[in-house]
Length: 344
Image (cartoon, rainbow, N blue to C red; front, side, top):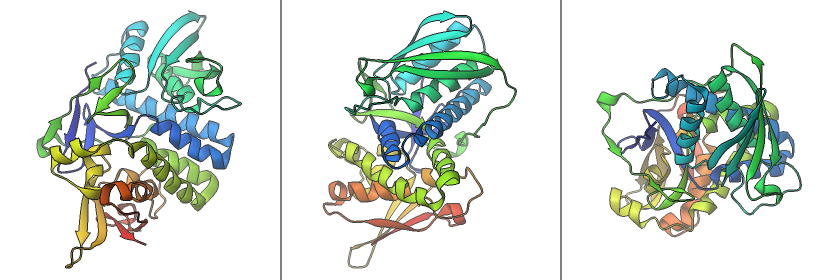
């Protein structure tokens, strides 16, 4: 399957083969898990495993329903899906053995074990869920995955998993995709630069993830720990901003004729950003239309763009030359027309 990544300049969104995605800096997904894990400990495992399994399954199901991936020979499907996620920045997966519905898979430069974090126990929770989602789609059966080795534990140079196809299951959690109307969008085709170890966009090594991942993940967390999730989510945005910070944004700025906070739209696909200033040209407010953080995954009606506010605050010094803290004052998740952020 050929990857067709396009940027909607008017909407500040990225679409991969018609489905909305986000661009994170390489190591972003691992940083998110690590930030949450420092608060929740081992409870993090089941949350991240289930969230990634559901999003992976949903994303691949959408590609199959759109006939972009064909239901066919299982080995051919594996090769195609592994190649797709390698191009999306998830690492190089290879099935090295199989026996009686049990499969051994290695992942080199896995997205869940890139950072120099050495943990004393299993850590590749998102990769476990990712493989569960992949094999669930291929076999149309339920799966269990187990981490045998993870680079983040210091036990191996690459990650090693066992995946077992355990039986039939007719229904799984499914998240409807976020798509675009082709006739109403002016989309720029984005070139992916593939190196031996990374996928680059705008000279930044990235991970491409369905945009539904974040609202689904934080919705799952909210169901467990309540409103306290939003403080964690803000910290997540701040930590991800630290990975972005060392990269030069000049290319993005020149290409799209943008500056300040507005750069986050083509940088990550967070939504359309508009910076509001006073008559004296001081920053007053930031408005975001189609914020990835406000996509409706559950029925909770409250402001919820805390990861985005963390990104804004964390990158403020780099983008505008001074450190500021922003908070969301209105949100499209509670029937606002846009998500509004003010300066504290």
